[in-house]
Amino acid sequence: MTSATAAVASVKDVSKTFGARKALNGVSVEVGAGEMVALIGPSGSGKSTLLRSITGLQSIDPGGTISVFGEVVQKDGRVTGKVRAARQKLGMIFQQFNLVGRLSLFSNVMLGALGRVPGWRGFFGLWQAADKEQAMAALHRVGVSDYAAQRANTLSGGQQQRGAIARAIVQGAQAILADEPVASLDPVSARKVMELLVELNKRDGLGVIVTLHQVDYAIRYCERVIALQKGKVVYDGPSTGLDTARLIEIYGPEFEDAFWEAKA
Image (tube, rainbow, N blue to C red; front, side):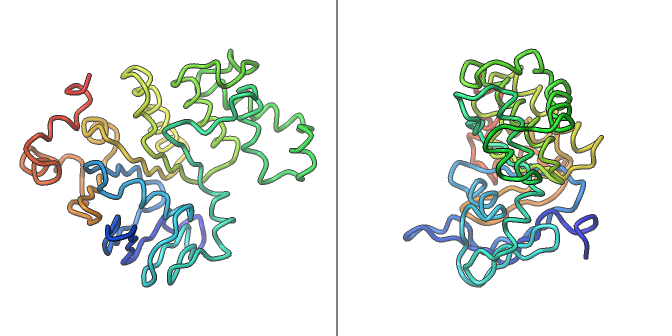
């Protein structure tokens, strides 16, 4: 199975224990290439743990297996030697942007090219013209090219998050894994970020897995939703199937708190 046809992530019987608490409890899901999937659930349900486990940033308990684009990256409680190559295919978007604050936005985006250029070029910032053009094109695509020369820590949260998406574009990622990418943003900036993720999915064919607290965003932007509760999958299906009764099962009677409008 090649990376062009393999699932973005295949998770089989995965558990993760922290002390006496099971953050994940026998989770089995598969996200196909080109899908855009939302992970939802109450705080502490295991969403971020699952996403971090897929990337190998979090090890899992013995017994489960995780594959990324057909390559096993975790097995029997250990991260395998395939994880580094797998990460090069995954663009990671974090809640706190993960940009280097003292560097310009342009320099941060250029870091996406590190996986394919000699280390000494990256260390000294000796980027080739084609890489620079690609970085500026990515910044233009996400709407922040005017801020290319500004230090990242002087930009708004929405601008930084769009810069992080531009970095994933330069990286040449085949899929985007986004962990609460809009949690720190105002509703307008959040919509722009979600629309960019949809564009990458629809226009570029990138698989997208995004954890969200805002159920309305999951329903609006993702065709498929996986819901976790206490480390277990309690729903995996079309976003249109998330009616009131189902949401109460997932979040409890105060499920409206999971909607952006209720929090604004």
